[in-house]
Structures are given as structure tokens and as C-alpha cells.
Amino acid sequence: MNQFEARVHLATVALVSFISSFLVARTFTTFFPSQVIITSGIHIHHFWFGIILLAVGGWLGINYRHKDIEIAAAILYGVGGGLIVDEVGLLLTFRDYWTGLTWVILIVMLAVISVLILLTRYRKQIREELSEHLSGKLALTLGIFFAAISFPFILQTDNLVVIAASVGVMLAAVIVIGVFLILQRRKRQIH
Image 1 (cartoon, one colour):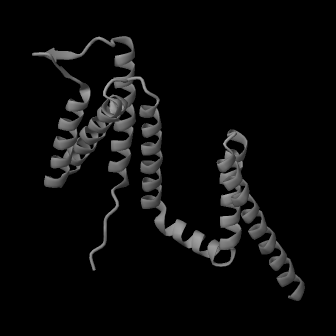
Image 2 (image 1 turned 120 degrees about the horizontal axis):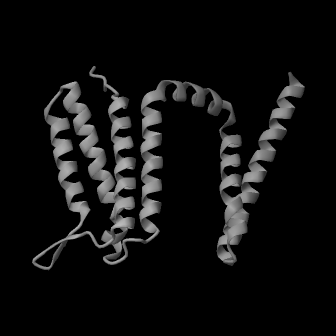
């Protein structure tokens, strides 16, 4: 059976390149907002260069198996992604480069990428530890998660529907946690 080979170092290089590229592009645009290539009335934004870099980095990564080329491909891919994400707000709104949507998308992407890197790198440890924990404590874990996730929504809004739903989830979670703890106490008393 073929096994997948995790190359976390390449994902890390791409991630660092992605973040750095985003920050450089955002800084450049902050200090030089009118520096856009305009030809025949067409604005050429840096996301076009990002698309080209993504394509070149992806092509190199697919076609060549050489350490130096793989690193170069990861860098090009990361830089291209950073240039595109820097302008995602502009692409989605067709007018507002400074929209907060860009930061939201960046943070979500970084979170997802970071989790994927961690899962790739430590999947065996994570699987072992979580399966051991969840085998007897799934209800407790889910109860804590739902209680924690509903709490901010109760406090942050004045929308009655959101508050009611969040309170309902919170109460269900507290009941699940309570039942779990009661059952655990009874088990210990029996043994």
C-alpha cells in the first residue's frame, strides 16, 4: 500500500511566504496607494501577479522532485497566495480594498492552514490521545465545547432569536456536563 509522505517543511515555507507576502503587499499599498499599473484604462492589480506566481509555483511543485525546486515552488506558491488574499476584499466588493473582509479571510485561511500543518505533522499523536480521551468522555468534551461556543453569543447580541438559541444550546450543554459528572461519580462509588 502506498503511503503519503508529509512534507511539512514545504507547507511551512509556503505559509511563511504567504504571510510575508500579504504583509509586504498591505504595507506597500498603505504607503503608496496610487501605485497601480494602468494601461489602456485597465488597472492591473497585484492579484494578477499572484495568480501567475501560484501557477508557476504549482507547476514547478507538480513537475519536479528536487529539494531546491520544491522550496522555490513553495515560496512562489505562498507569495502568490499572499498577493491574491491581500486583494480579496477588492475582488469581492469590486471597490473596497480596505474592507475588513480581507483580514477575516486571511485569519480564517491561516487558521485552517496551521491546523492542517499540525494535523499532518502530529496526526499519530493526536489520534492516539484524542481516541483515548474521547472513548470515555465524548459527552463531556462536546458539552464543554457547546457551552463555551454559546456563551459569547449570549453576551454579544441583543437579537432575541440568537440569544434564545444560544441559551438553549448552553442549557443543553450544561445538562450534558452535569449528567456526565453524576454518572462518573456513581461509577467511582461503585468501584
